[in-house]
Length: 301
Image 1 (cartoon, rainbow, N blue to C red):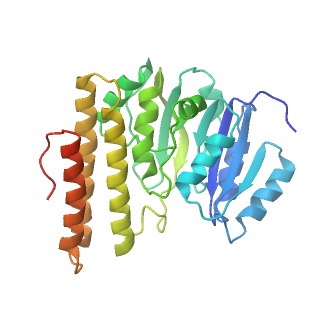
Image 2 (cartoon, rainbow, N blue to C red):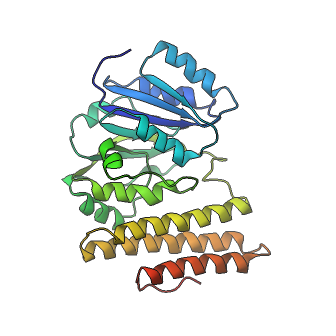
Image 3 (cartoon, rainbow, N blue to C red):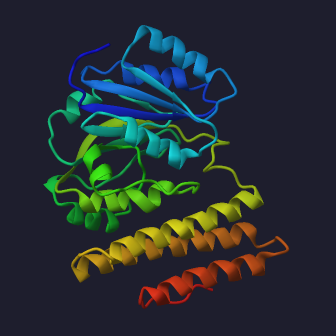
């Protein structure tokens, strides 16, 4: 067993990932720095995924494997948070990969959260983000909300693990869009955040992944989940002791995201027979929540 102090914990959820996990895992194991562990949290794979990671673990004792059965991505990530021992957590999806200098670059910083750049395989080159060094979490979230950056993803960050544990921050179980509801809260609790130019993560946008499917029932289920995540993050933010100026910026951002998501959703399902019923149900839930939170925004229709 390795004896170095563990500074970083890579958390990699897997489920039937045999086509991509070898490249993903090797990219992590090829880090120039050595003070890390790798947690593979499998969610009941029925293909060759476990055989691949088991063989790799025989050659490298940095790899830990935990087997589960159909708990879903949110709970799998929560298991990783609770079972990791590194000072920092880095989430990696099993079809993506990281660059070899990632940890060497991160070692130059001592913030609660370090945001690094992400290269996207679909031709958009990278997710653009504001760059800054050691600002407060509230100021960071304000900058992200005022940009066109997609920031509420679990990957592309190194998070101090204590942010999750000390503040009881965990992904909502059984929900998609799990990152949308949690990552902003993690940022809020951070004393300092840095956002750096270095491209450390390669995001592979694959047809057939859960975010690319368009089947009707899944489309509806994901919309319901998005609304739940919206209510969770807005409710949590408004219960915090945050200046009203910040609250308004955050509320404006997340409500605008919901408007965009909901309008796209309506276009996608408009030809189905129960369109009116589904839209009415969504609007009732959103509008009731906004009234309860005393948020004066135009009604969803």
